[in-house]
Image 1 (tube, rainbow, N blue to C red):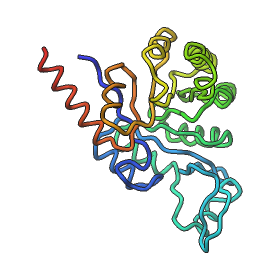
Image 2 (image 1 turned 90 degrees about the horizontal axis):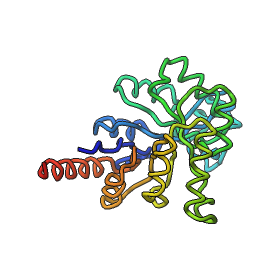
Image 3 (image 1 turned 45 degrees about the vertical axis):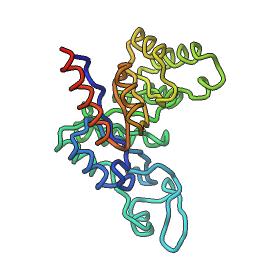
Image 4 (image 1 turned 180 degrees about the horizontal axis):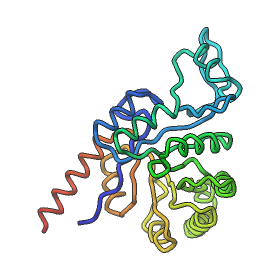
Length: 246
């Protein structure tokens, strides 16, 4: 029986707000393998959960996360900003893995230092790393596993074969363990090339059961979704179908 891909819950899963404890708890309750969230860093070097640098502040104001300390943010924000340290505590207790989607180069070192201090390097890996950021992490001695976010433009403006070749070459040269690919760009040709180059293939962000099923049948290594309950039902369905054929 073919092993089903890892189930990665995207932040904001099951209808909960993104970057929230409720989203994480929903993923852990369902038994997801991996939890993904976006990471930025405050002016005083604290890794926090946030997709954008611009943050909503009280009174309808906006502020730059990178230009404010954590205390300033929490004093002025419409809701508390969650620290990565708190989320990692839940991940460790649950025995799961966290995918840190790094949103700025400045977040690399603080995130790594925190993970290392918590002795969780085996329970964390990085995504959000285009080729430049992946190289920066490699050359900075950040010894966390990382995925290469493939260059989407290359898939739009080059032949498919050339885009796949570039992705595999960049992934290997930047010391990545795999490729992070929007599922719409995945074809068996990419999976074959990645395997030949010793690279895993993680796909994001899948919403429909048919697409989940196709990705699993093709043999991707992880499927990221905001609806992990649906993905779990697809896994159960596929498992029962395979068992009935044995």
